[in-house]
View 1 (spheres, helix red, strand yellow):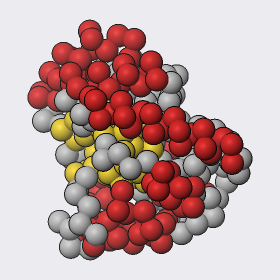
View 2 (cartoon, rainbow, N blue to C red):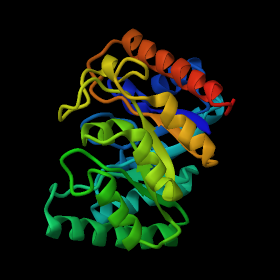
View 3 (cartoon, rainbow, N blue to C red):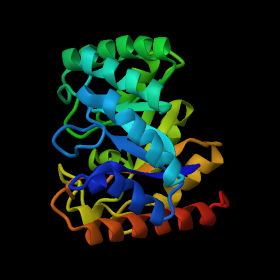
Length: 265
């Protein structure tokens, strides 16, 4: 498994700041944030001018480009994301499901949209991943399985985020085992309680919440998962660099300990 961090943790700062401190915390790689409103990192309307700098930073800080997160399923926006991914050398594009919870028509529309985007991913030679998301059409294991059954494309995969599954009142350790056959990316973070949102950034740091992340990573290891495990901490845009660094380093240490505990490192 490759340990990375989404640059959105440093969303209040420029991209080089994110690269610098994610590397300093000991991560293997980085996930580029293309999340409008949360960062000004991989701005897709300007990806052609940003791409050379991303490649320079990856080399300068010795960080693998593990993935990109672009939440929209808008075809034009997603095509920009995939074009940028090909140019920069990013293998995985993560998106959100959107839609409404417990609404059959919304779920079917989401699956249809993701199916079309998976075909686009095939054309560009990248992998499209989607994760269950609190409040969205795909929000738990049963709805994730529906998408897995409906979309056969080899360029489609599941992005598993234990905090969303936990807040859907499921056990993330059991949930990851149920969908592991199609898991191609992992967003990892902790959370306290099962409320709608993930909580304060510091409470999302691995080890500070209620989720059995040791058990979660053990299941990944036992099933031979070798893909990215990227920390995704949201809400820290107003935080100081020091606060962001503490969260990054603390979480990296916990992730390493989890890997060691299950014999993966």
